[in-house]
Image 1 (cartoon, each protein chain N blue to C red):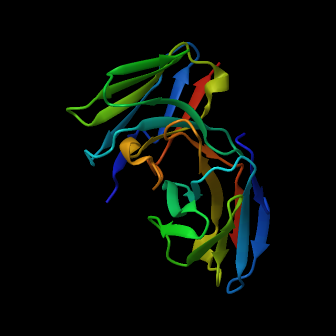
Image 2: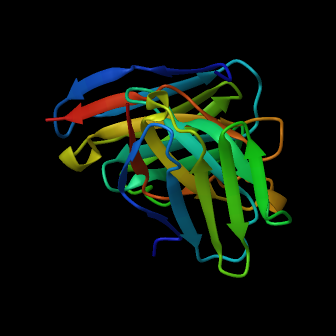
Length: 115
Length: 112
């Protein structure tokens, strides 16, 4: 059973466009939702994270939108640049449990920003 | 980089041989994790540790064992490697700020 479903698998956007990556989760006990960015040959790096008490969070050009009733959250990248080309993963965990048992990840989105 | 070092970074081994991957951290974090990454599957948790000698299974633990005899080291062992264990293995730690999890640079393992 896949607890976090991510779409699309791959995405190509022109420079300056706004790529949107979507995730849906099943377990209502999840209360911490991070996004990770991964470049080839590197480990995933935390990009931005949200808890369900807010509907939106912005950090620079990256925005998470969160819809608790629909159990969905999404990543938007404003004014996208070729340097944003990477694989993006959404994830979820139990924040209130300290996250000790780790994150559950989506399968990833391979994003390409064309010049 | 959260002070995480994985070794070896690349290894090719034969089916049936034992393999141990090492994760070393320098910042005294309590929680450590081993994930594997495969195309089409994302990152999946193998085992995790919440202290010295305290470990538990993750989603894909079959064929793997772990040990943590010191806070700074978390070892992942494949007792008898199989081709299905060809993967990229990532060690991770939980930081001091909330649930933030930081990853190492990965260990590329090929079982032939």
